Image 1 (cartoon, rainbow, N blue to C red):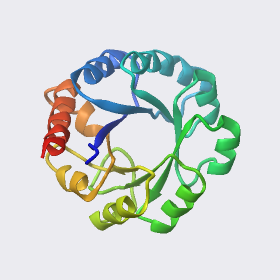
Image 2: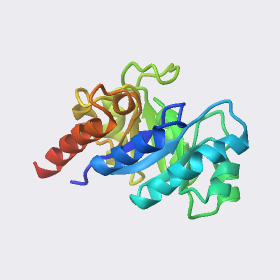
Image 3: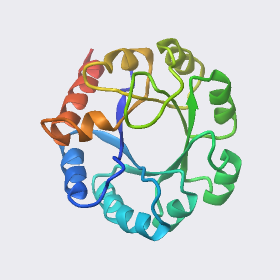
Length: 210
């Protein structure tokens, strides 16, 4: 059975000491991807903040994904872009970025949106929020059977997102999530991001050994 992997999402504040936090987190365990997600800053500032973070991800062979911003993906040579339902559509993004860039699509709790994304050439689909979260406003609450259905039907990976912690993630892994997208549970861990990544990694590795 393929292991579930960790997909880190940045906090909104990624300046100051954050690059050191990211480096420590990536060094602590197995992380597949990091999503750069900032809001309400100009393109020049976004690029300035993103460049050192992408360099750290490159060092650890972690995919660097940009939230929403196709121009920034092209400027940085990022590995991928994550699009919501209200963002640039998948077809336009693929035309702009080419075949080699990963494109992920938020599908909330919708089988229809997920099938559309898969048929349209998305590299992964994201379902959530599975649990209450303060990271962003959510209006959808999928059930575990959505992950089970998708993993049985489709080869395209699925990402579970929303309020995921080391304490509640096991059912998502068991249901077939290929990736766990995590923000607050890592960056706000009282013991630090590195310890949080270690906890998630231990859980995922335990499941692989079973």
